Length: 137
Length: 137
Length: 137
Image (spheres, each protein chain N blue to C red):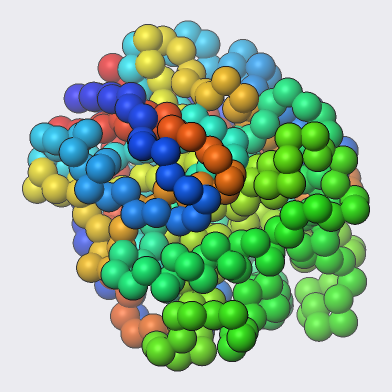
């Protein structure tokens, strides 16, 4: 049994944002067992799973990724879409543009401290489009 | 046909560790064709697939990740859980917290040199919980 | 319904290369709905999804990854397979060795600007082997 839903997130500012509840609202009800796959249809944002409790973690994520892939490097050749563009592409490939999670007893299986992150790497990324696919039995 | 098993790994020290055989023991028998998905229920450890033969590769993995995301940076705001905590979160999102592999003829399909890594990013991560889901026919 | 195909890519030079059309040719026809999973059977190359239009993006990807994980560091212990080898392993775990994409209405669902990248991290990686698995209904 395969079900699919395409939806858009509200626009988020640059940074790491928990979207677990927003996502759950799109995929209810879930099958008794299976896999949820969520794909983001963009190349300058990503999806990840990480700490869901303390907002300072997400602040540090933004700082660390900005230092890891800095803007405005002399050797960049792709720079006509803004300083945030080329780093956004690379950050997107580093965190990835999809997540997959187990479904068990009709529920999404996440660790106690796990939440689903939208990783918005553009200053003004706008509304991001996602496709959720559920393979279940 | 979907089967699922939840299990814990033994506690590993910080570093990169091959768990291919431990994992295989949990998921036998496999269907004739399908996908294995394994998810780790933590935000300071990860799963990856890499070189399975020479232990020096895993030593260098640890050194490289420690330099990539160093501890005790002045700009970190999430630091009350220890020096290894915030870097562990970011490393986890970089390698990812799940792997997916093809199953063919009842066997897990890995390249000759591929093994499954537990990436333990905490000094004392303890026993890590995993969920394996098999979609097969 | 699960279908699987194993195939090899032509040899590519080191760098990031779009293989969307080559891959599509291997997996046609697709089911009406499902998931495509593609796994690369190597530890010094990877798969990713990123910008498909401007080749300068892929040039910068190569430059950025080379600076992120530089060759010939004094602390590397795994260095007998060449300067490009150990960085290639780490880069592979950073971008990942598989991608998953939704299938809808018999088509692979990619964002307007998304293409599938072979990330070739060796100077002479040769022909890379992939396994595509399609779970569909």
